[in-house]
Image (cartoon, rainbow, N blue to C red; front, side):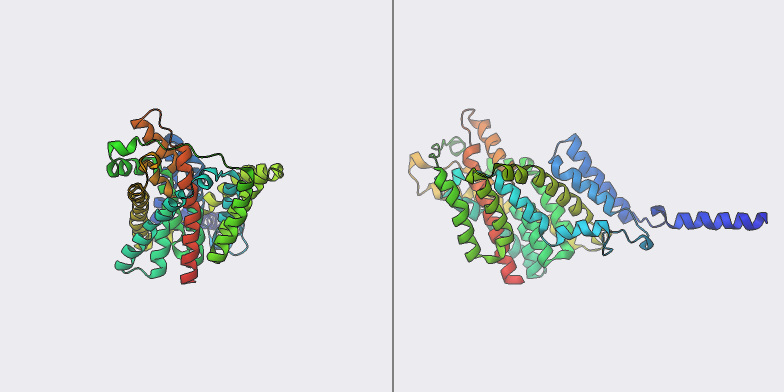
Length: 385
């Protein structure tokens, strides 16, 4: 009787161990959990984009706790809670909601008052093309090259949206790389800005932008939507939400909706997109060498985008009058890491002239980069769908 009870107890204990994560863990899980902890450390200790890196880091930890198949609660299990949350990432819901909140927060006045700043945001997307060409030479498919190149826009929602449509198997590595680069904008861009500009160029003072009327602010999102949607229909889920959010803001008659969209809704969307981006980083990614290509080529794309924005201003200044020149230090803001790249322009500019405030001017190419990156994603989606 005692032996029977002991055997039953031992069997129950073994059954219990079988259903713990300790029985299913691998070195891949350990490595990715350590990555999640590292991102959380950087967010808290170094204050690198904590609103992004804490949800992403914690999502990586959740997504890499080994779960017995019998539980049916994993991110890949249809109908599970984690799977339902992940649906919003893979089907473009969270990126669109992020763009809605971004539109409600964005002031396009600088861009409206100085339309040529739109060209800076457009030329900064050349990094996407450069990375596409480089990726293709290393044997990656055109679709993979295009989605990896989109990392150079430094626009997480856009990179996620495009990857979810074209290369879902690369979604995790593309999303993580994009958001890490966004978090490191203030570290990576200043050396390039200083290297590519002269001491004389860094102290160029730009004219104050003209006062934009309320009518212009209201008409901009309407005509912006019509032009971009008819030109690149595939960008509608992103730019439609961006311009809708901006119209809510500029109409001045929907303050409650505006506050909700740019406040609680944006916060919730940021939490969910960060958490599910972390969930997307599974152990299977480590078995493919493509994650290394994503990290390398994504970084190259980001660097090329920054360089393209700065060099375009230097070229443009050759055709502008001396009193109307543009400070090339705002060229880095052509990548759409809003508002960190614009703040980087301000920080570097103040190093060389304490009275030269570039933030207002840099927001022009910064929001232009948001529009440009969404258009670029729409073009790639149109070609490769």
